[in-house]
Image (cartoon, rainbow, N blue to C red; front, side, top):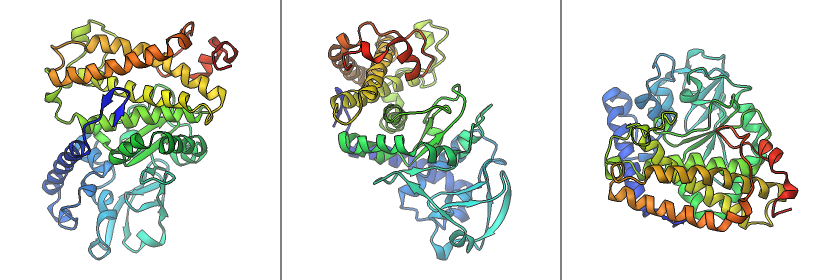
Length: 386
């Protein structure tokens, strides 16, 4: 399949990389707790791609405040092999997350012991996205919950329920208008976390909680187009981590090498790998926004206006990053091949929408696109879609 002009490697390629990731966690799990490891199905890659395990083994969060390994894995242990007693920990909102099982309510941050019978009698089942294997989380995860200076306007459970309508509309859009892309998303994404925090806590996805996409609604009304954009963006990060696992194939420098060592733009604190990711996520976002505008009968004029505004916002950033990353000192030949495909996608979108974007103003935009601010400077009647 293609995302704009970028050809996704075959399924066997990224599945092999997922297997490498599962092997990494499998070995770490065995070395950490051989007794617990023996209770698991060794051959089941899905177990060792459980997102909480990446957080446990790859993040620097103090293990004294995160959920125990047994809590991460009890949902993957057969009933006959489960320990009689289990030490668990609730999050700040009073939910005990039991991956592959569901939740139990308790007092916030409280560690305590439960018996295995409680895993069925007091369990709140997981919620999945409609017609999907992806879990809609009610908990913030340890990675988000222990982020520096994090605060929440409300519990993740409340936010997840409040924004279901636009989120589910976005999911339906992918499933019906971009089914191949959605299938790719589902192949590497295990869960969505929809949270409401101040805007400095951006939506994100990363290898330290691989398989999880985080979406910050910022305590504001959000539309299906917002979620289409952010799903394409954050799941794009999950996909690209799987696609470019062997970073040395694509980069001549270490993945954490500062991009500003090449650009001399001191304000840009990203790594070269972060900027490389950006080329892919701009591609996935613009591919999705283009599909929104192609499906004119599916969405209102206001939502089309929002999608067009988002294209203009990203196309400018995309051009800068394409210029900065067009450097054989940064990218190997394989990396430059990806760059050429990303650049071709940029050219396609730019040529297609150049006239429609002419005159749009973005001077009031913060780091992330805000449609309400865009509409102040670019009222709908002034657009080609009015």
